[in-house]
Length: 384
Image (cartoon, rainbow, N blue to C red; front, side):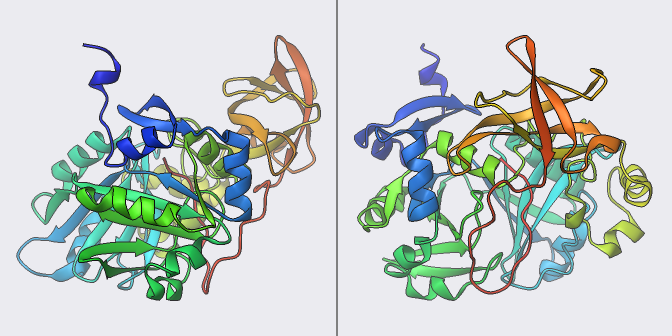
């Protein structure tokens, strides 16, 4: 049996092939990395209009309290595994948080939405099985844990995404950033959130698998919308300064080191009660020993993940965790961890490039300002 045959396909697999996508293995799935237009064209179109991304590889999970108690009981239970302030979520609101271990390391990052009678979680593909096992081990006595395996997840991102989606579901335009609701479309119930992972405005839409291809084709029929693959998704999120789990964040990084302390609200920081609380609270109070920073190589060549970062004395002070060409920036961009004393914007550093040192400087994140979103704002962190 071929390696490709071992991969899981998404409900949009036939559509990708019809559109001429180049497919690639990703977290056990066969996913489109790019379409014939190419990564730069897909990236640029998303920044200017709207890109449609298949993110059905992400895990979708429904968390419901057992024996009554409503969503409040489910939220209280989930707080045993994450530093997020889940109990404060009002119906229709969503929050970015992390699963942490006893040392404060990030096992995964996720989005949590209160749907009124249950919590809806979106987790990373590569860690999905581990996340479900974590939930079952920690919460099964209090919550029913349902993995929504037969649903697709479609992201429509860009400054014209709202106009395009509103032609199919007019009320979706009323959502504000980090807000969600469920609407009917051609007899199907579609949970829709005004969120995404490109730094642009837009939506993530959960669709029953049997209806996903028709729905995606309908969206692609709108003048503003073009397909975009994993390549453009990666360059967009890098320009937006957003973390990718397994690269910029993992079990060796804490939320504070990763610049995600904003996701830990005061109550959780003071009360603790989640794995790694002691280590995270100490870093919140004293500062972390290292920090995630933006890096701008001063040449034209991109610097890739794993490249050493050296300080003014030539000493290794960290490593690049994500790097590449930023089409909107018009040059190379990267992120990595450095000693806290070297994390200030403007700090001169050297990055290892093809066996030699290439000059770079620390820069504030994001590299590209976030696109305008409707209504209220809440910062996004890292995932997938």
